[in-house]
Length: 413
Image (cartoon, rainbow, N blue to C red; front, side):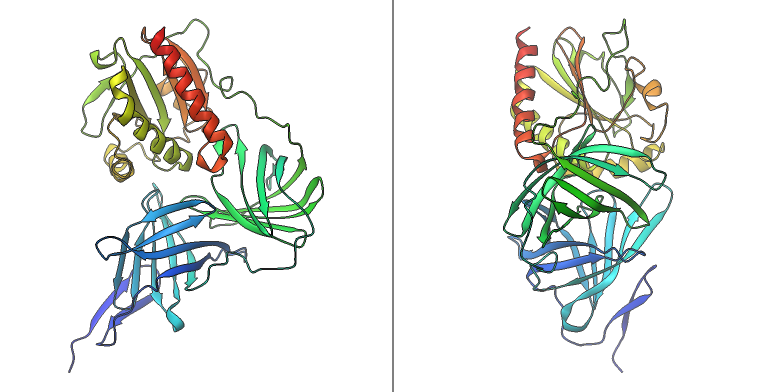
């Protein structure tokens, strides 16, 4: 009698068994994946399966021009295990008819795990089914209003580019952008989605020349839904990022000391930072915009650390527990090869007193990331709330130019 190996995947109610049949493999090429929300609003995205230089199977999650490498992929019998590189989430699935996948996507939060059914089919490059020929053009800038179930409103600027029936874009807000949105036009209906291991968004709406109406925004894997609408305005701008959070009157210097990932206290008053320009980023491993900024800062610091500039990350993790925060940050920082110190504040992003507890010299922490620029005398010169990442196109290019200009000014002063 042949030996039977059984692999039980906790929490998803199936087993995968190797009984001597041909080994199953992920089909190379582009897949279409869906997160199946309870309300039926499936959040769709694509991923590409390839082999790396060692012959190992890896994935690239595709959103518009972004390709997010996922290199922790295991196939065991009929089962597939995929661990996302950021935000502590993973997929556990099994092969079904035709080489498709069915299983669950799970996010490991600070106090619980949350899951949603997941499926994916190979050899499917489309994101949304191709529909009717577009009857409207959505390219441009749109002043957008979101309304949640409690009738609370929030504002953003949508920026979209349409090529035939394909649409790419994002929403800009005062605390960052929605990263890479990808979708299409079906007649007059706009459909956009994104997935990066944290963001799991679906947008639907009707475009009417200079307005967007009947919009629905589905966020995450639960029942979060918002209405949205927009009016075209190619001159619309967000508030100045330097005015959202500032230093309190009479304050010019920061004063803090927090442990690094080795438990060693690091202070802004340490000799390492004296007579240098210092960039401080308020961030978290749970934050997609922080991921984008960390990628930029890590690369920039490697090239510019010899100029008399230092960078410090202050991490606000989802738990005050140091060891859990360290675990969440370690993989995040390793992925970007971060060489500057990242300190664990021990304060969560949801704490309403996070500013007073960590940086009481500020008027508050209004969003993540927040970036603070300090001159060679230790004075805070600017505080920038939010981050316009690579998904924002020209805004990201402008950010990089402004960043370099400000650093050069501080080094010369």
